[in-house]
Amino acid sequence: MSKLFEKLTLRGVELKNRLWVSPMCQYSSVDGMPTDWHLVHLGSRAVGGAGLVVVEATAVSPEGRISPDDSGIWTDGHSEAFRRITSFIKSQGSVAGIQLAHAGRKASTYIPWKGNGKIDVADGGWQVVAPSPIKFAGNFPEPREMTIADIEKVTEDFVAAAVRAVDAGFEVIEIHAAHGYLFHEFLSPLSNKRTDKYGGSLENRMRLPIETVRQVRKAVPENLPIFVRISATDWVENAWDLEQSIELCKRLKDEGVDLIDVSSGGNVVDARIPVGPGYQVEFAREIRKRAGIATGAVGMITDSHQAEDILQKGDADAIFVAREFLRDPYFAIRAAQELGGGLRAPKQYGRAIEIAIASAEAAT
Ligand SMILES: Cc1cc2nc3c(=O)[nH]c(=O)nc-3n(C[C@H](O)[C@H](O)[C@H](O)COP(=O)(O)O)c2cc1C
Image (cartoon, rainbow, N blue to C red; front, side, top):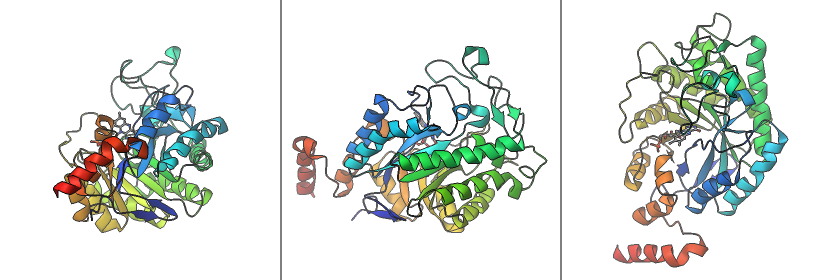
């Protein structure tokens, strides 16, 4: 029996397999509202057999959006709009998750097909905030240094967003602390030059993400798992790195986090990242081993055998896949055929896909 198609139970939630859709911005929202695009896009991946479908980075406040077209969950109207999406995902035997996010100094930027870099306030952008007034890159917005009141409001916004997400029917909450967005900006000494209790020592740099996780954990039901996505390294010297990530993950485990979704990079514009098949798996392995917490591996995992091998070696507990699920929404069904995973296609598609499974089984 393949490990990729083994169930995983986290708190009160059973995931039918360990092949999951990684959060992916669709830049297709209006005022943060999910649209028909989201229903079809996310729904298709649930139809395609993924055990968990995680909604894109969804802003906890309007100024936390990467772009004006990002999804958001800062009003009850947003959670209402997400409800039919979670309900459809669930109807396919999949679990609906959502990534809650604040983009910090990387907010107010153009979406990939409209331009790049900052959107000026005059063109519909907004004043962005960050731990310190340091730009991400030349053509990015100039951030305003956050006050203590701003920082405390971020925690409140995450808590309110998490409660709304539960209300919308999400069963996994992922907090985005990766890719150079707000929490990663607090963690990394490159973007956090504060001299108050939120900057300087590792303890101080971890304070905001940990405090936020603590408050979110208190606010959502006990039986609901919380994930945190981190960047395990900035990929440059004297910056955020694996050792600090391991410390952070130990602390997150103590706060009741159930799984770390282990990515990397995003906070240094010219970092040299050795991108290649499974290039971030080593971080998932080290965090799993040394922090003693479940991990999800992500990054250029595109093949069923590659995914299976990562789990068989004990490098991670689950696999997040992004682009391969865009190329093939039925990647999970295909992987099950290749590995003998026992995952069946929806009955509506049986005449096309069950035959393929039957013939694959006959051939073995
Ligand atoms: C279109 C697109 C949008 C993305 N949006 C997000 C996002 O909202 N949140 C996030 O943490 N990562 C995001 N990512 C990163 C992916 O989740 C994933 O970590 C990355 O693409 C590496 O996995 P892959 O090689 O399977 O694509 C995005 C990637 C793509 C391709």
